[in-house]
Length: 192
Image (cartoon, rainbow, N blue to C red; front, side):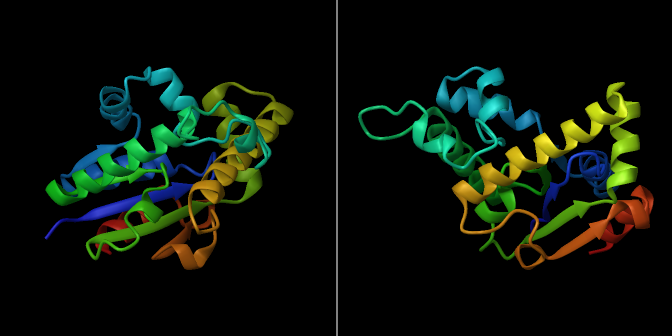
C-alpha cells in the first residue's frame, strides 16, 4: 500500500519544511520543485514558466484566466501545465509513496484511497516574522508577499478545481503550525 501525503499551505506557515521532514521521517520521496523537471520533460516548457504558472494564478484576479493566450484548441499554457502536472501526479501515485507540496495534488488525488490531504496554516504574526527572517524582508514587504502568494495560490486552485483552497472539508486534516510547532505537525502527519 502506498503512502501519499499532499500538503497545501499558506505562505509562511512552514508547509514546505514540514512536508520535507515528514518525507525524511517516513523514508519516502518528497516532491516540490523536483516535479518541475518531470513537467518540463512532458510539456517542453521551461522550468521557470512551469514554476510561475504551475501553482499560481497569472494575476490576483480569477478573470486573468480569461485573458491569457490560448491556442486553436482553446488551451492556455497554464491549462497545458495543469493537465501534464495532473497526469504526472496520478502516474506517480500508482508507482510510489511520496509527500507532495501544493500543485492542486489534494484535488488531483481526491479519489485515491491511499492519499492523505493536509492543509498547513498559521497565525499571521508568526508567518510574517518567519517570512521577514527567511527572505530578508521588511514587515510591510513580508505582509504583502504573504497576501500576494496566498491570493495567487487560491485563484489558481479555485480555477482548476471544484474545491476552495484552504477549506477544511477538502482535506483530511488542517494544522495550525503556529500553535502546534513544526515538530508536532511533522509527528501528527507521520503518525496519520
